[in-house]
Figure 1 (cartoon, helix red, strand yellow):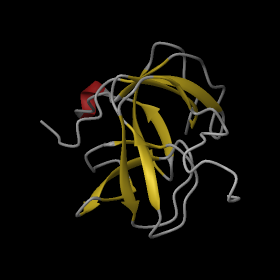
Figure 2: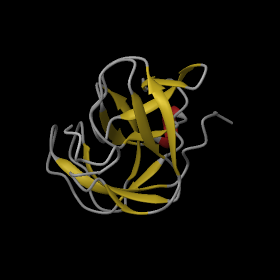
Figure 3: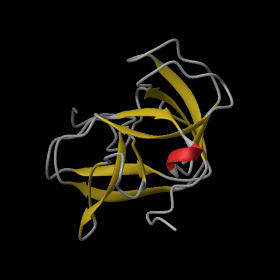
Amino acid sequence: MSFSQGEHTFEDGILVVGEKVRAYTAASALSAGEPVAVSGDRTVDACSTQGPFLGVAAYDVAAGEEVAVIQDDCEVRGIVASEAVSAGDGLVPAGSGKFQIANATDGDDEVAIALTSAGGDGETLEAYLCDATGAQE
């Protein structure tokens, strides 16, 4: 980031619509669109498949840097799928910085809804973050 560039420019345009964005400290290096969870006092880290989902990182950061986390009631683009996803599918963190289809039989509560489709692992899509609560019920 240059000195003439704003601190939070969202140059990749990950935030499409929404206003719930909060600042935290990154516990490790994070990538834009990566699902995150609380890992310490005002600190976030990559969200595992088991951890409570807080939101997605708004941009790439190194460990120890401030990161904006986009939370519920926001529409985002550029999140990465771990499998083929259809528009309308409920999504949960898959680990490895990706999202997978929620499986109700496994007790997965969707945290996002796919707004576009992804053909397979590693493809990006747009989603609506619907349940970035920071705690599991």
